[in-house]
Length: 306
Image (tube, rainbow, N blue to C red; front, side):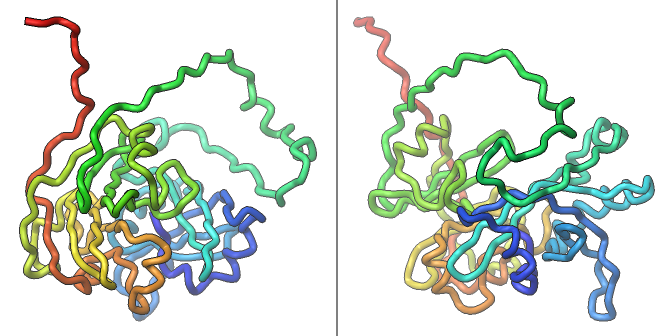
């Protein structure tokens, strides 16, 4: 998920970005001390115990019980983070287990000491991994099988598809000419911001495609937009884009990811990032996907004739 308020800590985040404009970090999550201007508890994100951003109010509520649970045990919640350097500023995302996802092994298992992060080395042999030796037992090699791409005809221009990766992460993509713009936050990952249909087929075996759209008169009061995996289509900065709500707790704001690319994002009005219903309301001609159908690999001929 995207970390908010990170614009205030660009200098602190920037120093962790490696030469290839991408860095993997370990972040910790902390319950913030409420100020006079803030009445709702929220979560601070820190790297090396220095604040680098916050979580949105809806997402904070999904992490605060976990943070308080471990704080009572004298432990701190840690999670993976990655930083992508863009033309304007670095962007920080985190990926961690929320309270509603925590299993008994997580809640009551032994604590883990996070390895200390060090500067990047030119030669891999320069890294001292002796402290990790107990976790580095070699495994038997498993032959890698090459998976052939499924054969699903490419949907027409303007089509919107929805798909799932790793059993949890929900994406959408909209066709724009000879390519598809996806809801991925960054390029350079498994799902990139812009991809060819043939590239998507190598990664995804099943898609859902929008069959029907229904108009949305008021984004801030339409209950359909609060549903998990709801998808809207609208016009902004002269282009038709789509967005998906990945928040499953019926939050009044949701957690939205849009198909805007970095290039198009820079043309948005200042402060608009299309992560909330308030931002989406900036668009026009808004519609919600009201009917879906599956796109699956067509059955192969059996060779029999009648």
